[in-house]
Length: 218
View 1 (cartoon, one colour):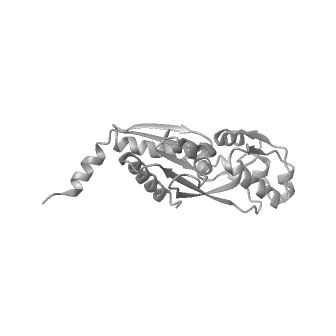
View 2 (cartoon, rainbow, N blue to C red):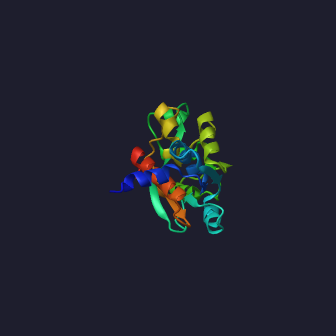
View 3 (cartoon, rainbow, N blue to C red):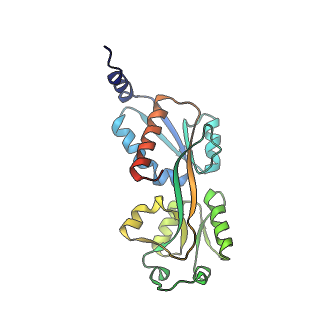
């Protein structure tokens, strides 16, 4: 009797191909380092290449065969599949005056400095809609990198609306705090897209699903 399980295991653990991944900045910085670490531990002979690009460029990278799998906040990817729900929340550093304020007013948000992503970031439209909903007009500092925005918030430059998942470590450590201004959290979805389901792509998607189960964010 042939043991198909052992054959499959031998085949998958000896993956030696190249996996090219294209991802938007927040996914590239907040999620994929853990995924790539898990992949390398399981398949040390697989070559991993990660390209970070704006969400709007990920579909182009896929269609031009420059990457094998794409990860984006946009659902315009080939064979797009949702893999995670994210939440954008209003944050400040733990030492920011608003973090220590006992009573809150929406006017506080009008009178403090903001840091916003540039208009190429898909979250910018969602943030602008939220600010408009609450009647908040700001003269912000604009930054193109989610990581730069997070570091600027940590340094005390201002407040921002950022991915809860990308800030989970700083929130757990108490360096960042979610501001309680009755501002509804903004929900969004992360997607993967592929041109073909090679063994390397399948291995990546499997690890991504395992990661989502681990963090219970699906």
